[in-house]
Image (cartoon, rainbow, N blue to C red; front, side):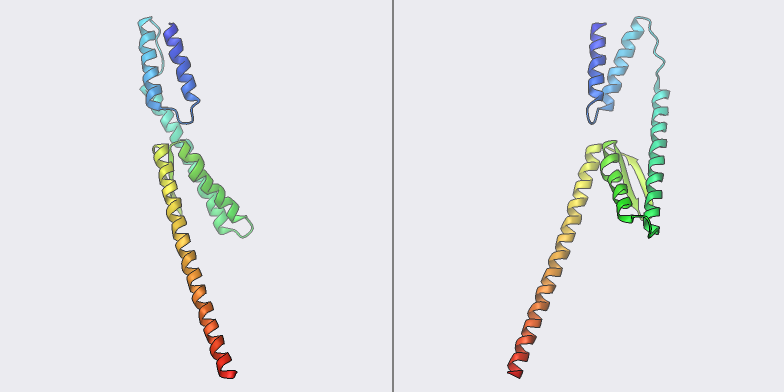
Length: 167
């Protein structure tokens, strides 16, 4: 019994981790149930309750996605709502909050689509996307700076020609 209590304590400690392993916790629960059944204790939890928990989580996720979509629609279609702030909050939900929960949220035009995924994989993809976006922005800024330098050089050449013609 002491070993079972210690396993339960370890499981509770693992739940406090940032990203607890569901497979590890399920294995520990299964082992504890088996051991309790040896002593004649029947546990009411079964696979059906796990499926209903997933269904509940799916429903919450759907509600969150619908809420986020509604905020995005409000921000995009109104001059009085501070669009940038609402869109930033929506993006923070997509990029910071949901990935930690193992939810990948992708914007497909006006539609948002979600899927369960590994939090580390989601975060890796978000970082790669940000790096690509930053690289595109840097290339665009570099091209604009080059064009501005060319325009300045052209204007200075025209000024010099004017001075030579007039002077």
